[in-house]
Image (cartoon, rainbow, N blue to C red; front, side, top):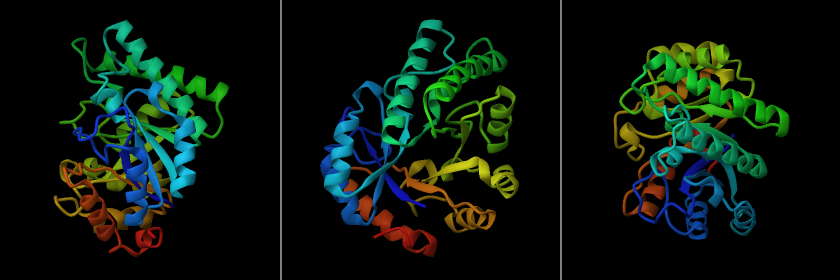
Length: 276
């Protein structure tokens, strides 16, 4: 089990309203390590600007390690959607994801799909889901043919954030029906459905391969309405032993928020064990 904190790749401007630390990566990693975190999740926008050699160097220099690649700003900053109704824009998103998957493989980490999956377009939900399925099948075949030990995790999101695949069970059924072999689920505490998702975890915990920790609307931990005691108990009772990442808006005092996050997480013995 690893407990990470999100940092933004350096092509995302310092101070941008994204979840995680922004600015100079080396400084962020040093502050992350000082706060007690030993690993980091990397938020990306343009996959071409992921400098894998620099990341490897900084891992050694700061004694940290990358744990995961997050594609949130491929949609938020770059405006890419895998199910775009425009075929050229859909191809642009697909090409971007394939590049990101290759970078993830070089870094030895998994990668997620959140808002990148897209929206419901004017031709309706069925066609929107079909385009997403076709795009992900191409990615799935690419991974099977070219890459080893890499998983792509679809992140169920609340309907007000994304109108498709809003629960773990919906996401699981989609993965099965599309025949996706290299896919799993990323659970986010801010998008967790205390009803259907709780039931799902009890019998399908093996499909959950990463967990994002965030409070309501991705506020700092303890500043919203998320019941972390209940969520962590559900996860650990079901047998979850995978990685966690803190994914929150840090505000202008980002290093104070980083330190406060570590303090909050130390309340939980299973998480305290993996913090310095």
